[in-house]
Amino acid sequence: MLAAEMGERPREVFRHLVDAFLASGEPVGSRSLSQRLPHSLSPASIRNVMADLEAMGLLYAPHTSAGRVPTEKGLRLFVDGLLEIGELTPDERRTIEARVASTNRGIEDVLTQATLMLSGLSRCAGLVVAAKQDATLKHVEFVAVSPGKAMVIMVSEDGQVENRLIDTPLGLPVSALSEASNYLSARLRGRTLNVARSEIETELEGERAELDTLTAKIVSEGLATLAAPGGTERSAEEKVLIVRGQSHLLDTVEAQADLERVRTLFDDIERKNDLIRLLELATEGHGVRIFIGSENRLFSLSGSSIIAAPYANAQGKVIGVIGVLGPTRLNYARIIPMVDHTAKVVGRLLA
Image 1 (cartoon, rainbow, N blue to C red):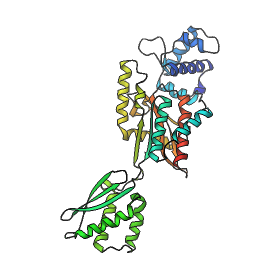
Image 2 (cartoon, rainbow, N blue to C red):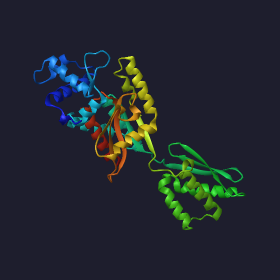
Image 3 (spheres, one colour):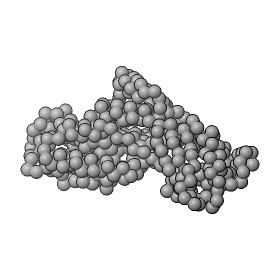
Image 4 (cartoon, rainbow, N blue to C red):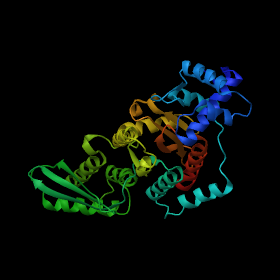
C-alpha cells in the first residue's frame, strides 16, 4: 500500500500519530492526537480512523493500552511516503566536517571518529563497514622448523605478527633462507604486501633478482603463502566492522522487556558477518537506505532499525558503508540527513 492511496483524513491521523510516537516512544491516544491535528476532529472520530488503520495492519495496541503505536509495516509506509526529512543547519554540517576531520587522517582514525560522532549525535550506536586495510610491513623472515618445512614470519609496522608454514626442498641450506629473508625484507619494508607483490614477482620472473634458483623459489613460495591466508587468495572484498556507542542503546530502557530486546540486539551486533552483509545492501543504490525491524532476519527479534549510506572514493567507487543502529523508534527525519552528510564527508577525506 502507498501513502497516496490513503484518504486525506486517515493519512493525517496516521502521520501525526507516528510523529508523536517517534517523539515520545509512548502509545498515542485519540485525545492527545486530537490536540495535534490542525483541523478539529473529535476523539471519537479519531478512534474510528485509528481502528481502520489498525485493520490495515498499520497500527496496533501494545498490551492493554488505549493508545496505538505503528507496526513495522506502518513505519515503512511512513518512512517511504510521509516522512518530512529535515535539513542540517550550516552549523551542524560544519560540526560534522570538523569532528570527522579532526584526526590525523589515517583511514581507521577517520572511520572511528565518524562512528563516534554519529553515535553521539544520534544517541544510538554508530557503525561502519570498510575494506580491510593491508598493514604496512616492517620485517619478513624465513625460519627452518623441520626438514622440508620453514616458517615465514611477517611483522607489520603496528606490531602485528603473522606466521605461515611453507614447504622447502630437502637439504636447503640455511644461507638460502637468510638470503630470502633479506631480499623480501628490503623490498617490503614500509610497504603493503599487495603494493609490493606484483613488482617482486615481475623481478623474479625477469631474472633481475640476484638470487639463486632455490632462494628465488623460497621467495616466490613465501609471497604466495603470505598473500593467501588459510590457503585462499586474499580478497579485496574482506571487510571490517567498527561499532561505537552501543551503550546509548540502553539510554531509553524503561522496562524489562526493553532490556531483553537490547540484549538481543547486542547479540545481533556480535554476529558481525551477518551485520556486514546487511550493511552492504546499502551499496546497491545511491543515497540512504533504511532497514526496519524484521524486514531483515538479523533483527527479527530485537526490533531494531539501521539507517545507512555508502561512501565512495575519488573515482566514485563505493568502498564502505556508514550508519546508525537503534530501536525502530528512531528520529528518522534528523538522522537520515546526518548519515547522508557524514558519508559524503568521509568519502571526501578518504579520497
